Amino acid sequence: MKEDLSGPYRGYGFGALDAFDGYVSYRLLDEQALANEIAEMKEIIDKTAPDLVITQDLGLGMILWMTYFFPEEGWAELHRRRSLAMLDRMWVEDGYFCREPSLREMRFAFTDYGVSIGLQAADAMLERVERLNAYFEQYRSGDEYDRAAITHVMACNSHFPGRLIRAGQAAARAP
Image (cartoon, rainbow, N blue to C red; front, side, top):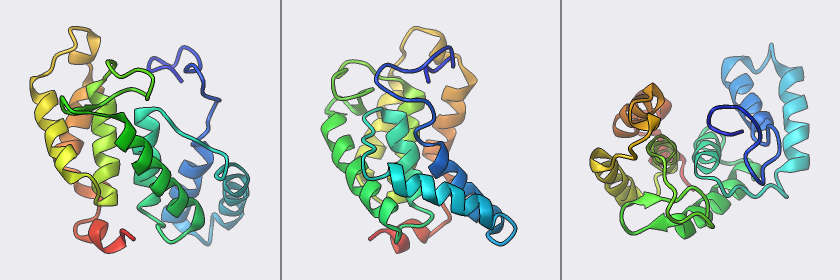
């Protein structure tokens, strides 16, 4: 979806990550009580994961963060590899990840902060996380995102991932 939820983002289907999000959330909440829902989400993941190619910065950060919780599962291994490879292509040496590979000049602080969280969960590209944080401490887009709460909340999470990444587990879980 577009950032303001007014419609689909060009080139993306509705809810491509919903099954992954549901699966991870349900398993973390209560695997026994939500066993049926977990099985439904897993069935969708098994059907969609092999063909799903994510090229949007925030989607990459989100899926990378979700792979952190169950890294040994096939979908997680696949999307961790794919996400890191795509993000490597999307890195701009100024200190940010572009919106998608064809939009090298487009950047949003809040979406890059989401990428940062995913990278920290994967214990990958940590030098780029530092550079990204430094870049967006100075960069101003001049639009509503400079003042939007989401930008500042995501900045805090990028600098201090806290409970988003359990202390000491990112490195221990990374393959």
